[in-house]
Length: 354
Ligand SMILES: NC(=O)c1ccc[n+]([C@@H]2O[C@H](COP(=O)([O-])OP(=O)(O)OC[C@H]3O[C@@H](n4cnc5c(N)ncnc54)[C@H](O)[C@@H]3O)[C@@H](O)[C@H]2O)c1
Image (cartoon, rainbow, N blue to C red; front, side, top):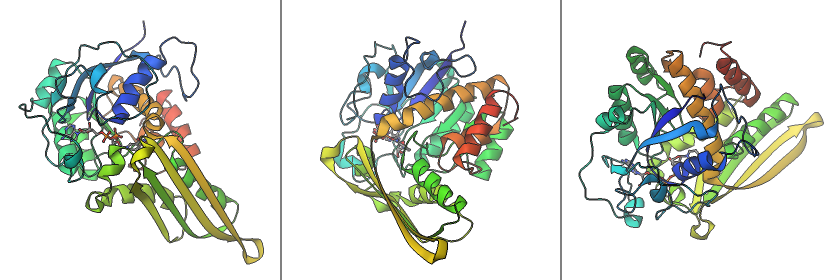
């Protein structure tokens, strides 16, 4: 019999929708196109079970998770029917989860917040994923504390630094619980493409003089990110992933650039690089990437969730180094993509401790 992973979600937005749908899409064992691993340490995507979910939007709280993932303002593609899951979305504490833009777009639920750690215990969750909006610093810390209190693992999909912060690493280690993050790195997203191109240029002896990465999209993630005050960690997360591939300073500007409503959950990214190769001769590269953003994170999260179950089974606590380097933009330890993937597999195969 295969192992199951019991997952709780904070933030039932487009990413949660893609994750839940993905576990249904890949349920027949035949069609594994688009997944890095169908079977990971004996677990298939359909072995992921959702046992609790928290949000603050009136359109989602009180609904079964299978309905809430399709509720306004979520606007990603539908790829699978999801049967009623018997998991009601419950109200979490708002804290700084809803910024000034989001508060114009959604109506907040006026029900009383539930006690998250109690619900995590009652639902027998193995781990909690934070899919909160960018800039939810206080709220992310709150959910991390609730995970610690309930004795479950914590996966931080957003650019607030928990797994990569030494203080939080120590708290999770002392509690005997694993933590992975921060800021999920999409399967074929702007970050992995940009850092891999930069690494290629460096390896081929090209001197990089400047680079930028502009991103636009039409979902609530991009609407929320119009607020520059919420973007400090997002820019740091995205830039640090690229910066780590070069040993010298490169002028760069990387981050969310605008909200274009009719794009819905499509994200368009423009990467530009300017450099010099043999004989000081100039070179320029321009790349356009067009993706449905939420699905770009779902496969990676399916891997991160299963890897955390492996860590829980082995009683590994503290930051998961290889899992975070492979699945996240701002991990405790940055690695070039190939090294991260190798380390991840070594961890799964028990050839590497964390
Ligand atoms: N490929 C990707 O889509 C990708 C990649 C990397 C990181 N991320 C990050 O993942 C996060 C989720 O992305 P998304 O597209 O699902 O965003 P989203 O805006 O669609 O969803 C966020 C959800 O969180 C809820 N929320 C707000 N405050 C809350 C609180 N205090 N408690 C519980 N719920 C709360 C909102 O109501 C909403 O349902 C974002 O921070 C995004 O930047 C996404």
